[in-house]
Length: 470
Image 1: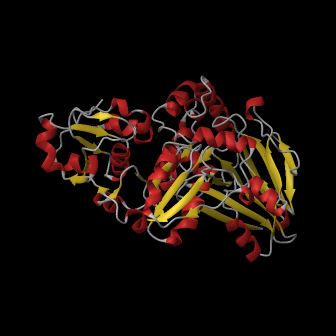
Image 2: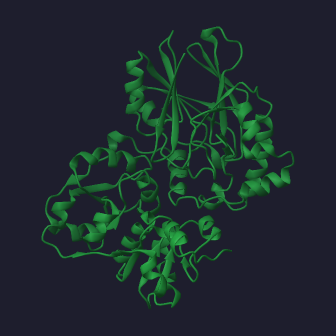
Image 3: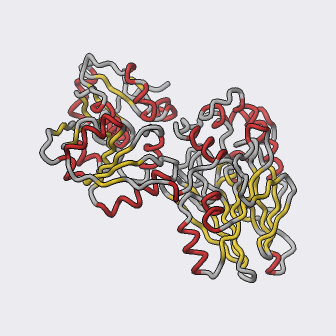
């Protein structure tokens, strides 16, 4: 048997290639849309990509199963659990098998047993793997998807907060309690292979270790310590981060099927700054430079989403899926990786791109300043500036600058009316990175008198130490 681990840092997403080396068959569990990585690994190991399985209808990335079915003829294995709202659609013409609790299927000499593990979503399933080809008569591990993570479990409130299914959070938490109790009955030696790691919004305290065991999680995972439903439900629903705006889009896309790459158009290059204003009027233009460069000079109306580990998340929060998207980048070589990141969450209308130098040539630039906490302390105390805090709600509740206005960054474009404009705005987050994105949103929306707090709340707390708590 062969097992390969793939990890997308921008999505904190883990997927797995599992192959039977005796027959040459292989399956990818919870494939991302970037299926070339599996093709390359399978070819290197002398395997064929014959199958793709999903643990549930994902909300945080576009699943690559349908792309694999189209390109390689891979058979799809997907859940048939949950009610009619959580059934896969548009499977006609695709070789597939719908799975229920207790079902088994084989990939060569490997056996995968289905375990229904609802809670994160109603249709969620896990796959228990046995390597029969190696002579084993007992399973070796379980692919848990978004059910059990290292040190955490899947959140049950996404359907309500992101997809708009009201009243499902508590019901999901109760289902999760039952699923966790069932998980505890598995053998301690089973390896645990989750679909996400630290940084994912699918839980609240995911560990950064890629795998675990059932026994270890039973000892140290906070969610495994409860024996009664009520306190478990309360603890699970408390402190969950805001789900990214694009999660609702992903649920729909993965339910009905994303567009295939062969049907997508590539963005067209431009090299003349005269087209920039037309781009801004038609859709959104994102400048992918680091904030320090953007702050010193940028085109009016552009949004700064730096191309770093957080790029995909903030693009999902801020990009309008229905409008054309245009990208400014420093080097042409960045384009393929940027496109991969955007398409990984279904942003398929990237229409044009341009190098930043060409886009800014000959036009009037705008900028914003950064200021250190000690240099703005007096203005804050005297109420001479509006402090805008764009951190998450949990961060805000743990402590914030007195008198600050709280608008989480991802919601800022739709809540500009909540930002007082009678004074200069001092925008801040934890470190200054998210607030840099926020500063670009404010300026692009016509709110020009903006300064970013250098070092953010972390530096403010150390140097000024004026903090309010809820």
